Image (tube, rainbow, N blue to C red; front, side, top):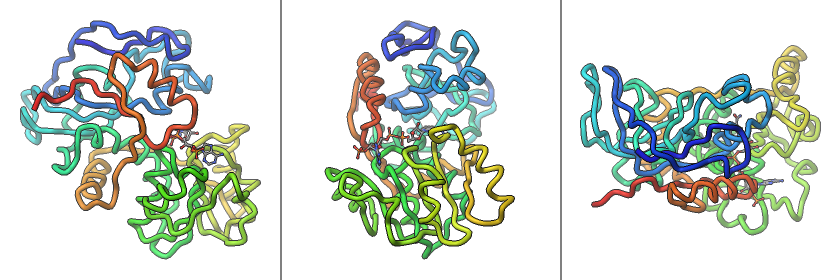
Length: 324
Ligand SMILES: NC(=O)c1ccc[n+]([C@@H]2O[C@H](COP(=O)([O-])OP(=O)(O)OC[C@H]3O[C@@H](n4cnc5c(N)ncnc54)[C@H](OP(=O)(O)O)[C@@H]3O)[C@@H](O)[C@H]2O)c1
């Protein structure tokens, strides 16, 4: 089968389309014919080994995982002998966050992994873009236990994580203030934001409103700069380590001080999460934002675009478009 393979760390052009062995489904696995996947910031960080700490997880000298891609949507082509919940022909989507392998024509994933049948109202491309940014957003939101009526500011509301966060927060009944560029103000209002701050015209850290939660989905702020925006006991969440990699340390220290605090949860994914997203996708409460689309053989261009830091939502890769 064809796959996008990288055997050394480096810039986008270390990735090559190569023939590799097609995986087979073990007893507890399903084999998915991948129709669509994404290139996201996790793929970029692992391929480039940036930050350097990524090498502790992916191999100190050379990458252990040579086919990236953690989100996918496609058709079940085969099931292992012990599989009972999926059948050949099912349209499925999901997240393979530890094994990756979605930048390929086929992927094997455990039946009890982060996998569900696709909502019928979605294309493969939409379904493929529904689990990565959203699972980071959901992990942050659940960690902070955001409730209906709370005031939440989302910085970077047009990224994959930020655009999902705005929608998930609105679904929970939060009052959302979103920060984005002028050109995206209407887009972000369309995601449900109650108020939008244009960061080219206004410094959101000088806002006069206070918030229960500040969620930085783009790693462009810090607890120090946003602390004054937080209500007493308020929470600063970030999807990024922070400019000095300080967020994990602050997440350990600030709760001890019993005031405003930083939370930096390890993102979790499981089947419950994918089913939760499926429900929101079916009801229309969540729709992934899709920016550009590329074919698998254009993946180097896709990576190059993702690494501009300017993508709007998600960049989709069409692997094997369905024939019908
Ligand atoms: N914890 C993890 O393991 C993990 C995994 C994935 C990603 N991340 C991190 O999470 C962050 C977000 O990832 P993502 O995939 O959602 O990002 P993304 O989609 O690449 O975000 C890009 C968006 O950020 C906006 N943006 C850029 N500069 C901004 C600024 N100064 N203020 C507000 N918005 C700005 C851009 O919009 P404009 O055009 O309006 O500027 C663009 O739409 C990244 O920092 C990434 O490194 C962490």
